[in-house]
Amino acid sequence: MKIGIVGAMNEEIEQMKLDMQIEKEVIKADIKFYEGTLLGKPIVLCKSGVGKVNAALTTQILIDYFQVTSLIFTGVAGGLLEELDVGDIVISTSAMHHDIDGSPLGFQKGEIPMFEHSSDFTANSKLVEVATEAALELVVADVVKGRILSGDQFVANREKVLTLREEFGGVCVEMEGAALAQVAYLNQVPFVIIRSISDKANGEASLSFADFTKLASKQSHDVVCKMLMKL
View 1 (cartoon, rainbow, N blue to C red):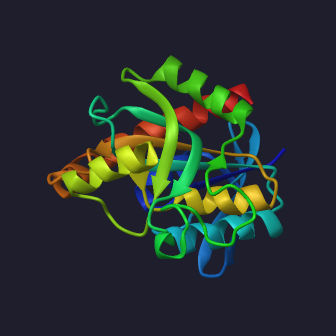
View 2 (spheres, rainbow, N blue to C red):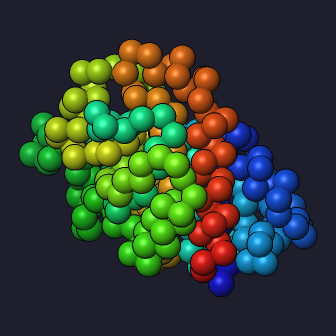
């Protein structure tokens, strides 16, 4: 077993980097990977950078070069459900791109044109179960399972929130998870995405994100560590 743990920003991986026993640092495609152990489990930790291309690139390197056997993406997201508050945890049941639109060609929004598989990438049920158990044991907040939406844009608009919720059935929105999910799916590597809500993706999202990113990142860190103890 070797687990790849990915965050998009420094805040999302910094505490895990401090906690782990680093045996080797490797740079591939300008991405720094930390290989070692965390809570006795072999892991490879890295910061992908923001956006779907960075996430996809990082994921393929983790699979090809480091030969990870499972993947966890951790970090923050904007909540799409009215009942979600800052600090709540979302565990992915699946992930989907919300910014792919081939509808003029007869495809559904979010459907990858000419793609032979489902465009809604299902997370590994065992990893989802363990992540949910870990979150429920740790977090004094709501823990929700559902579809995570990804796009190369920071959502800070109430009308967009309503669209993402109603058209795609999304629980939260971020900028990387579906890319990791797609690459993991095509390589048959199990994955789960763990997101802590940093904002409500509305008109106040940019202020909320800045204020609560560190808090939300700590929540995700704690859940991942508890999860490792159970694997």
